[in-house]
Amino acid sequence: MNDTFNWRKSSYSGQGATCVEVACKIPRIVAVRDSKNPDGPKLVLTPADWQSFTDRVKAGLHDLA
Image (cartoon, rainbow, N blue to C red; front, side):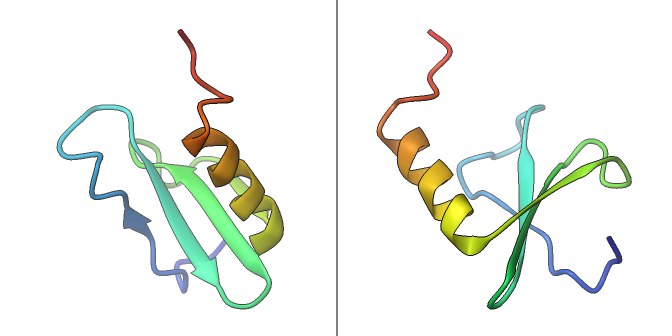
């Protein structure tokens, strides 16, 4: 995935060690990567799948506790 994506980190991540970055290519692609390994693997999702995932996270369905 080339660097024409504008990667951004969540404002909630602060200076923490575990962060993800997201890049959107409207209207078809949302990419996610580990901020500690920007050259590593990326997840590529449709906007609908990204929305579904973030809705589930906000609802607490992916909490590790």
